[in-house]
Image (tube, rainbow, N blue to C red; front, side, top):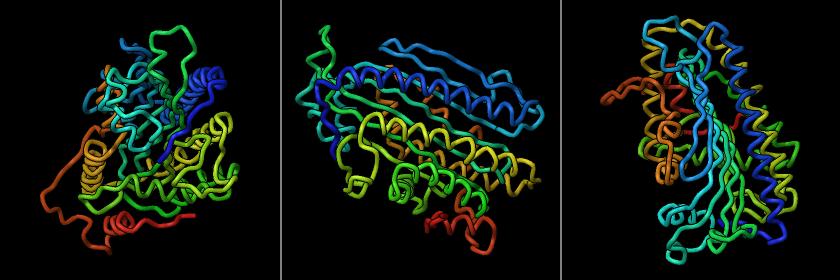
Amino acid sequence: MSSSTSDPNESAQQQTMRTKMEAWIRFLQEEIVQAFENLDPDAPKFQRDSWVRPEGGMGQSCVFPPPTTTAGEKEYILEKAGVNISVVHGTLPPPAIRQMRADHTTIPLPEDAPGGLPFFAAGISLVIHPKNPHAPTCHANYRYFEITDSATIDSSAEPKVIAWWFGGGSDLTPSYLYPADATHFHQTHKSACDAFSPSIHSALKKWCDEYFYIPHRNESRGIGGIFFDDLHAGPHTRLPDNPSDHPRTVESLFTFVKSLGAAFIPAYIPIVEERAKMPYTDAQRRWQLIRRGRYVEFNLVIDRGTKFGLMTPGARVESILMSLPETARWEYMSEVGTDEETEEGKLVRVLKEPREWV
């Protein structure tokens, strides 16, 4: 898919977007962390770990549980969670350029930029793994990315933006299927999308179903949500080519992304609050850990974001791998979930045949 080419006169506007994006992700991170701390006030607080990237930029990782939590303590609503932000800049090496160019064709070939290309990226990424098997895992990620001309690396002039785009989404990964939860999660995000376009939600939902797919298992990671990448000023191959298919300016796209980010708390917190109260058995916990094994498989084998993060110079590995659950399980030829009449089998059927929830 193509990426947008920026007008040189927009360079100041793009610089301003860097500042706006940083301020927003800082606000959203604190809002989400506070929501979870209020949900379980007796639990330890999230550890707030600020860091500096030697190659350029900074971030803050908010993680649960903190390292001081020991085994055998009271069971809390969350088992493991992370709400991370990063604002980084530097130079993309040729291998990263090659991977990104598959989706952003206006980026020069790696051979034409042997020294790499300057980049800026700001985003928030979170993964929540509740302890109760009835409470689903949830992931969300919203980011802004721009690449500038290598000719301005050592220049005092404003960088010429070669490409800019927004990406992100949010998706739900239950171990046990509760249709009311699925409908609520999807409807909340659809309402956020409908305020900007009558057609964009269906496109982002389909994109999510296709992206979070584990081909070697022939099933989806979860029951979907929304997903998008490379949203910019031009047409997009994943969206209908009409003026109302999605916002087109950097400001309107930023407003769109903020609306989706604001949907996370009302979409997810009520589900966790209700399901965390339910009793569960050792057998249900076993199934949850098997499903978390699938989560690990997707994140380490399939996910482009994980791969890109790990190959970026100065990668903060601990923050990148924050998405992995505290505990997971792999069983050889497990029979759990193979009977479609069981609660586990009902989930597997939906994972193999994605459903329209709204």
